[in-house]
Image (tube, rainbow, N blue to C red; front, side):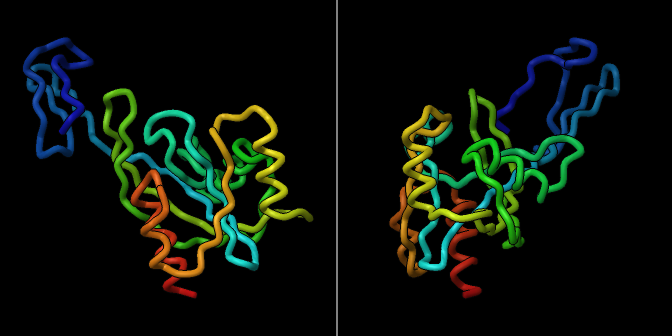
Length: 181
């Protein structure tokens, strides 16, 4: 496990131990810290012509690579609520017709800490009128947390391998989306 503790966070003992990469245990004070996965969502937004909306990441991890709107689920928030919030925050849009695709394990390395995640993917449609290309142009004209918004036509599962995607979970979700037709 990369996230090595040197001291127990409760008592300061140097005797903290890792048990099978599943938990940290301190024999001095009995402290247990379980290594649970972080829950996150990803949203595949597409139109009737198989144009998909991607964000080119402006910061680490995976700066410069593509991802989709999404992020970590907040406390007391459902996955579907996180989909709606992330779309509002990242692309300033309301989405409808939210449908579950599947869940995929992933690794998210940030500031020298490795987070194991369970990424839940959904599809969604933009609410209201306007195309993905119009939304991308609008977002690219304003200051944002992403380097660039990209619209990419995808017509086959084979084409997914060529995309500069940041996370394997996105690639797997797209493949499953195309398998299901």
